[in-house]
Length: 180
Image (tube, rainbow, N blue to C red; front, side, top):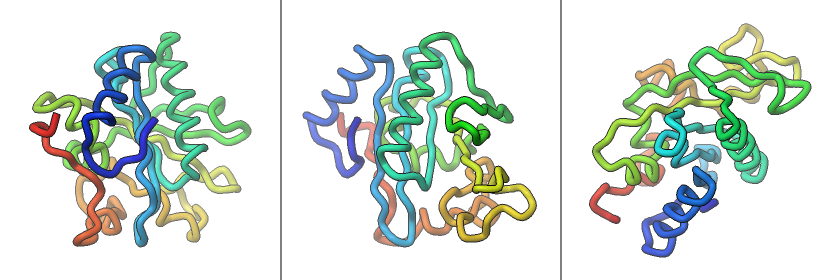
């Protein structure tokens, strides 16, 4: 697991090591107002031919634990696809999975874009519900939680509620493929 925040040879070696030994690596992107934290996998596609996973708006340890739980389930043969729901990751709550539009992948999964270089890779966003078990796109979802989870299945900034990801001077990391 690593915190996003710039390329370094040691960090790159850790990513490669984790992928070679576990099958994936987890990157945590810290919050920088106005955007909230997120975590994502690198290596699920490489190792298991499964979409990379990303989750927004949870505490770092919870997000990393969720990505690791998904990785372990994928290693055991589970598949998570666009439109799936799962009640076993955060009982008693159901989580939902939606494909991340390609336009968002380099921005929010920058280290994965570095790892895959010019190769396209799929990504799925895990969504968590509010206390009433509603998902972010469902009617009456808790308005206080809307800003925590962008809807990256939409390619446009407005419908994706992703303006906070695009704040000038505060972009999330997106390393160049030539940095390795």
